[in-house]
Image 1 (cartoon, rainbow, N blue to C red):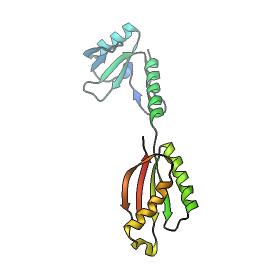
Image 2 (image 1 turned 45 degrees about the vertical axis):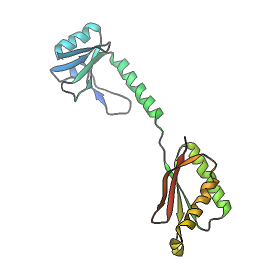
Image 3 (image 1 turned 120 degrees about the vertical axis):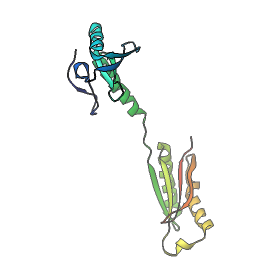
Image 4 (image 1 turned 180 degrees about the vertical axis):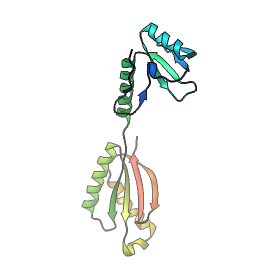
Length: 180
C-alpha cells in the first residue's frame, strides 16, 4: 500500500490515497466500477486492503467525497495517458493578418495571397486588412471592397468568410477561414 502524495505529470493535481483521505464518510466505487454506496472510511479501507489495492480520492469536493478502489500506479498511468491524448487532439488556431494598401502592386498581392493560402492549409483564420491613410479613408465603399476582393480572388485554397466586410479604425477588414 502506498501512503505518500504523488503528482500526475507536471500538474499540481494531487490525489489523496489510503490514510491521507480525511473524510469519515465516503462514496466508494469498486475496482470493477460498481457503486458500493456511502461507507465509513474504515470499511472502505478494509475492502481495499482485502483486494490488495489502494483507496484513491477521485472527487474530493463532492459531498461525500468519492473514492475508487484501484491500483494507484495503474490509475496514475491511465490519467497520464488521457492527458496526453487530450493534449494531442487539441489544435490551436491563430488569426493571422494580411495588410494591404490601395496601391499595392499585383506581384505583392500574389505573394500575400500565396502566404494566406499556406496559412489556410494549416487551419488558421486570416484577417485581410485594407490599410487606409490620408484621403483614401474617404473613398467610396464599393471601390474599397473591390480592392479587398483583389486579394481574395488570388487565394488558391478553398475558404469561407468567417466575418464579413467590416469598417475598422485603419480601414475595412474581412476575416476568412478554411472551408471544411
